[in-house]
Length: 261
Ligand SMILES: C[S@@+](CC[C@H](N)C(=O)[O-])C[C@H]1O[C@@H](n2cnc3c(N)ncnc32)[C@H](O)[C@@H]1O
Image (cartoon, rainbow, N blue to C red):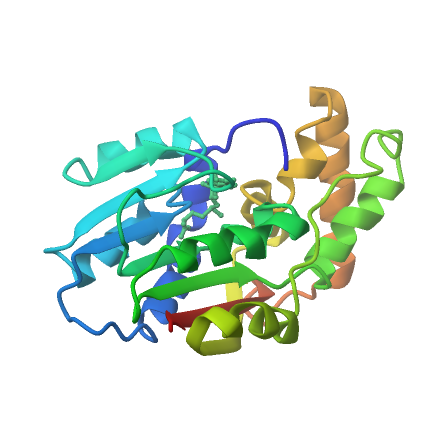
């Protein structure tokens, strides 16, 4: 994971596109009670996914947690009546049974060996019927991300960035086999979004808020500028302009909803 803190403002440049999967995920959540008592948004970011949960469960005790202070400050300012905490998923414990753990676009940032262990530990703390729902981008083989790795390997920054990037996510089979022994149901699916963005520079701005961070955070300001220019050049080769001059960014995402047995 990159060492610098996240930027809520950079992340929110594409708020509508980033929040849509949280609605699509929540649409598949079936809780035993329509009025759950306890709901937790894991890796809540600036509170965009928390706002989706709040509108669905206005009477629940809702908590958003995130390891980024910048994100939590933004979330608190946006939703002053919701409880937010700065905490790390690797050690986080809610302290009481949770009806719904919800997590939109977060677990891909945990080391591969840790993420399903954290998910299992939290599911095991839930009462029977408790739901754990998460979504992660599944885009490491998309041109946008291949181009990041190619740019990293081709420049004066190659050595600095030799281990940059994030681990691939577990396959649906691996997720199912790991979680099914403690769950009555494990529902897994993919959705491929095709986001129409204003330009190639907009694609750069999108990934600057997330996937590009481990590549540009370690660089000096001058190298960062050169890297971004080289990266945009590759995107221009890989993504044609649409009929309206915009750029279509294909974005596959993996969704999982489990029910505790
Ligand atoms: C892509 S944002 C997702 C924000 C929001 N959930 C949404 O729906 O857009 C990922 C968030 O995960 C948080 N995060 C990454 N690793 C974390 C960890 N180990 N513990 C808690 N939060 C973490 C980051 O700080 C960031 O706010």
